[in-house]
Amino acid sequence: MNIIGIDYHKSYSHVTVLTETGELLGKGRIGNRLEDVAALFENLEGESKAVIEATRNWLVMHDMLEQYCDVTLANPFKVKAIASAKIKTDEIDSRVLADLLRADLIPEAHVPSKDVRLARNVLRQRLFFVRMRTMVKNRIHGLVDRHPEIEKGKGMKSDLFGKSGTRWLYEIDVGSDERKLLDSELTLLEALNARIKSSDRWVNELAKGNKEIDLLKTIPGIGKFFAVLLWAEIDGVKRFATPKKLAAYAGLVPSTYSSGGKTHHGRITRQGNKWIRWAMVEAVVPAITNDWWLRSHYEHIKVRAGYNGAKVATARRLLTLVFRVLSERRAYRPVREKMRDNIIASIEKKKIRSPR
Image: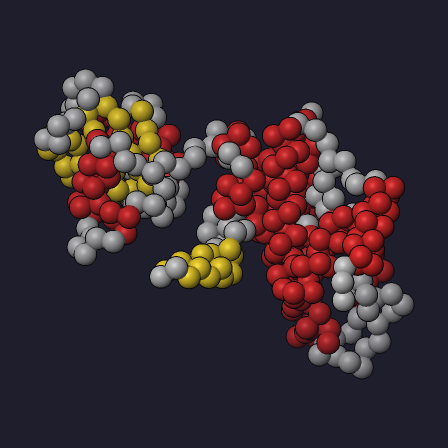
């Protein structure tokens, strides 16, 4: 069995090949092309297994290697032997990866299927377009605000980019130079709107007939886009043993510092899947608006932890609901009003009985 450690870079990769006993068979650079990878395996005898880190564009090398051998994807944050090395070179990195694979000590990262990767790329591209559109709108607002002498029409102060607002933007007199700038911004805005509509059609195709997405949409605050995003980014809830594991994957758990018998919990780690974390935080406001149980949880935390603390805690509670809905394969059932009244009455009784 050949053990191959690969330190992947943009235009080349450094490769170290070992035997199962640790004997060095070869090392050096190869190009990141299929013919270069094929040439590497033509010179090796017997079966092989390889390891690469989940760095930028790792899937390019991963998919090429997969055609010739078993491939392990290493979590770069957990490969401490590389991160803490005093001397760090491509040769040392690839050798350490090979040694860790040989000893079966590689902390593996999840490899999503090609369909899930495509869905993620579509969703992330749509998010990019939406952020670009927000930037363009802000620039247009800034340009218009430079001309306070121009009165806005009815309703345009709240929505400048509706039908009447857009027509007004094309007609107002802001001077020849400013007119050119405004026209270019409006042209860019129209192009981004078209791209977003095209992405929406693709999102609708991804959601069609998917039972997990339908279940996710029953959770307060989670619409079609967030449901598709969560389905693609989680990629199988069975990967996580508990809701806490899923929360840790999203970086929604507090950091912990423990030493000398003292334990301190700080802010959330923010290490993990930023897309799930972002979606959960964004879903908090519509969720607490439409569900009294989540609202009560939010208000309870807000008293002692403030606005941000309550929002993060509610985002974590929403992610727990996501875990349960997917793992139990059932729709979210809101707490009934009768049960709510019973809970409130029980709390009031406890207040009366408690000694002052």
